[in-house]
Length: 378
Image 1 (cartoon, rainbow, N blue to C red):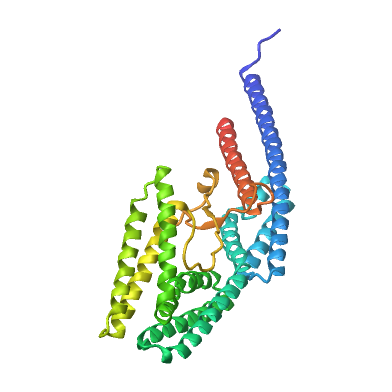
Image 2 (cartoon, helix red, strand yellow):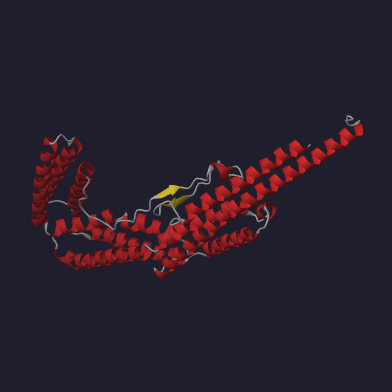
C-alpha cells in the first residue's frame, strides 16, 4: 500500500479538523440547550414566586395597606422580564432579555413591600395614639376645673401640661398627613418618637398635679410603693442579682419624698418650690422604675403603645450576582428588609434572588465555555 502523499495528508488533516470542529460545535449546541432548559426552569420558579408576591400584595390591600406605584411597576417589570426569558429559544436570546436589570427590580420590590407591610400596622397605631390623646385631654380638663380650689397656684404646671397635649395632637395630625402622602416610614417614626415616646413626660405632668391636689393620699401611695420595691430588691439580692443601681435609685426616691414633705409643711413657700419638689420626686420614681425594669425585665410606671417590632435583616446579594452589577458607592446595597417566614417560595423575594443567581451563574459558565471552545478551534 502506497503511503499517503503530502496533499492527501493535508486533506486528511483538514477533514479531521472539520470533523473535530463539527463535534465541538455540536457539543456547544448541546451544552447551550441544556443550560437554556436549566435557566428556564429557574424562570418558571421565579414566575411562581412573582405570583405569590401578587397574592401578598392583594392581602395587604384587603387590610387597607398602601401599595405604591413603584411596587406595582416593579412587579410588572419582573413579569415582563420573565415572559421574555421564557420565550427565548436560544441562550443568545435568553442573555439578550436584560436579566441584568433584575437585581434593581428585586431591590425595589423588597423596599416597597417593607413599606406596604408596615402600612397595615399604622391604623391600629393611630387608634391607640388618639385614645391616649383623648385620655390626656380629659385629665387636663378635669385638672383645670380643680385648680381654683387648690391652696397653691398650679398655672405653670397646667400651661406645661397643655402645651404637651397640644404638641401630641399636632404630632398625630402630622403622622396622619405623612401616611396619606405615602410616607409610611416617616408617619410611623413620628408616632413612635413624638407620641408614644413622649407619653412618659406627658404622664408626669398628670402625676405631679395629682400629688399636689391630693398630697397626703398620693404620698402614702408612693410610700407604700417604696416598701413594695424594698421587698422586691431584697429578694433579688438574695438570688445573687446585682441590685446596686436599684438600691441607689430607691434611696433617692426616699430622699425626694422627704423633701416634698418638708416643703409641704412650710407655711411660707412658693407654688413653684412645691411643684419643683414634687416633680423631682416623680422623676426619681421613674428612675427607680427604669432600674427595676433593667434588673427584672418587667415594665413599671406609665406605659405607652408597644410599637410593632419589625425585625429587618440586611439583604445581601449572592456572590454570583454581585460580580454582574455595579455596586453603589460604599460597596453594598444598604437596604433593610423584613424577615417573613421560611426561606422558600413562601418568601418570593428570597426565591427571586436565588433563581436570578442560578441564571446569571449559568450565563457566566456559558461564556467561559465559549472562550474555551474558541481557543481550541483556533
